[in-house]
Every structure is written in C-alpha cells, then in structure tokens.
Amino acid sequence: MLIQSISGIRGVYEKDLTLDVVRRYALAFYQFLNKKSTKIKIVIGSDSRPSGYYIKREFLRILSSYDTELIDVDINTTPAIQLGVREYKADGGIIITASHNPPEYNGIKFLNNGGTIIEKKDFEEINQYFNDIQEIPILKPNFGRVIDKSIDLRQRYINFLCEMTGKEGTNNIKDLNQMVVLDPNGGAASVILKELFERIEFPVVLINNTLGEFKREIEPTEKSLAYLVDLLQKRKAHFAAGFDCDADRVEIILSEGTMLSGNHILALLFGEILSRNPHPEQQTIVVNDATSYLVKDVVEKYGAHYKEVEVGEINVVHEMYKVGAIAGGEGSSGGAIFPPSTCRDGVLALLLLLKLMACKQKSLKELIKELPTYFTLHGKLKCENDLVDMKNKLKRYFMSQHYTISETGDNTGGLKIHITDSSWIWYRMSKTEPGIFRIIVDSKDEQEAKRLFKEGIYIFNTISGKA
Image (tube, rainbow, N blue to C red; front, side, top):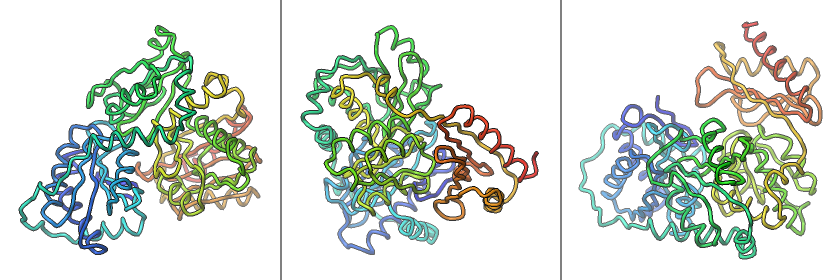
C-alpha cells in the first residue's frame, strides 16, 4: 500500500512506489512550484537504498525537461539535504528516503524553501495535482540543468555540525577519554562520519561503514543493536551509537546492553542547552504529547516553557518556528531538533552528547543517574471498530471518571488522560498501521506504570467489546 501523508510518500519500491508514481509526483511538484515562480531551483538527494538511484534519476529526467535548475546532492543524510535547500537558496527540495523502514521500501519527502517538510495544505495541493495528472507529456530531458553538489554539501554539513557544537565543544570532545563505537549500517551517515571525527580529532570505532551494505535491520532498536554488546565489551568501549538509513535518528546502547531511550537523550540535551542560556525562563521547548514527563521535569527545572503537539516531527518543527522555540524533539527517537535545523539530526545529537560528557567529565551512565526516574511502557492495540468512534468513547469514559483530558491534532490525534501530575495514559490511532491504536503509559512509580498499562488495555478492550 502506498502511504501518502504530510510526512512523505512511502511504499515498497516497484510494488507501491512505482516509477509511474515518481513521474507523476515529479510533475505535480513542478506544477506546485511553478505557480509561485517561473525560474525554479530544486535540491534533490537520497539515503543509501539501492532504489534511491532509480527514483532520483526519474525525478531528474522529468524535472530537467522544464526550465528548472536541479542541485543533485546524491547520497546525504536527511538533515544535510534540508541544510542544502537553505545553503543553495532553493525553492524546494526532494528527499528520497524511507528512513527506518526495511530496505525494500523507499519514500519521497517534499521540502519548502526553508528546508522544512511542506505544510499540510501544500501537500494536499501537490496531491491534487498528482491525482489530476492523466498522462505525462513526452518531453526531452536536459541533464545539463543538473549540478552535482554532493561533495560540496557534505563539507558544508560537516562545517555546520562543528559550528553547532562550537569550537570549545569540539576541543573538549577531542580530549574526552571515552571509547565510542559508531554503526551507520551502510546508511547515509557513512558519507560523513569518518571525516567528521577526523576533523575534530576524536578517535572512534567505525563499523558497517560501507555505503548501501545493511548488516542489521535498518531501524536501530535494542534488538537490532544487541550484537554490538560483545564488541563494546571486547573493545572496552563505553557505548555504541546506531543510525537509521537517513541518519535523522540515533539510538545508543551501553556496554551492558541497556538502550538509552529517546526521552533520556532529549532530557540531557535540553537540560544542557537551557543551563547555558542566560534567560531560560524566556525559552520554549516543543515536544510531542507522547514524550515522557522526564523531559518536562528537566525543562521546567530551568523555568522554561514546555509545549506539547501532536505526534509527528513536522508538527514539532512547525510549532517550534511558530513560537520561536530553542529546541524540540520526540521522545520516541534520539534525534533532537535545534534551529536552524528543520528536522531531527542523529549526528548532531551524538556530538552534543559527547560535548556534554566532555564538559562535565562524566560518562553517559553517570549523567543518566542525575535525571528524574520515570517508567514508560508502550503497546499496540487492535481495533475492529471505527477508530474515531473508539477514540470518542475512550474520551467519554475517562471524562465520566473525572480525569483531566488533553488532546492534540484533529479527531485522529493523541488522547492523554492525566492520572496524577506525574502519571498518564495516552492513546492514538496509528497513521501507518490500519486498525491499530498505540498506548503509552508514563509514571514516576514503576508499579503504578505497570498497573496503569494493564488497566489502560483492559478499559480499551472493554469499550471495544473484546473483554
């Protein structure tokens, strides 16, 4: 099934995401941009999936048939490609990636002139153009319009990472007495990690760095990164960082096999940036409503404003720029968002963690111990009923029990039930898995978290008629 959402188009290559679909979206994006400008510049790049080459070639073939300047940045990370739109002052961008999905998948993300994923109304307009196209005109491609900036962008991105970390930060990292393993798994991070860490003179153990060779599952999880524990112990390394295919997220596994949650990473990074700000009480942090209150506690410790939005990175980014937030992110992944970046950035998150460790002369384990303790449980619930109706029934039930309810997004968005100031149950219908609700429970008390998780599932099943 071809998934078409504001976060991008995604499907199995040649089955759902066919070259015909690519051609129609190429023409639709051109028509969308051409409405605003007669001279168009587009940045286009991909992650390291083999199908990315063929999809990109088809985009270039169609778009070069028109009066369009095309900046081909080839294989680069998603944060780098979004940076490229800003650096080359383009009118828009195209990223060919399926992020953390298996290798047989691929996808398309459209960017505006700020390098941000396009807004919902713009995506709907592009989709309307897409649906209206009956056939693609036969035009002659002009590949002379295509300019290769792949190596140039990699250098610009490395410069950007170093600037964001700061000279003091990179100097401190250089002197950090920690052994770290990096596993890009043949993904787009493979094109910059070696040069980046050579630039800041911090030796790392770099594995699985051959572009396009996937030695584990694409998505870095506790299960897929478990094989690194033996290497960590053998090399006496402190932790390993695993990236997904487009490197917008990073997951960290410690030497004893414990996985650092995205909530921990956000809490550490937000705490660091707020502690260095002269007026943290004037700053805002934006997260999605499924993020642990661990992060909220850290943000509010510094008196900063804490804003929740619906799940979805683009929702976080749009709200960040709307309110002028200093940072944002989603607790479900380890890539935080720091302006002028317009997406999660796993490589930048890693550098900022190393900077924090170096400045405080503490290991990740020691830093985590200083954070508040929260217990977060996740699950999936099957629902054969109408999903919107099910959400409304859940809402009515908990309101009848006199709990405070908060919602994000439209009638398909998140539903959070506040049990206490530090405990909640959260439901949301999946946008990618038909007939599925997600449930998350968060609490400072482990037994309370387990009880609420069990109760939340029971209530859901009872209302849906399963219990």
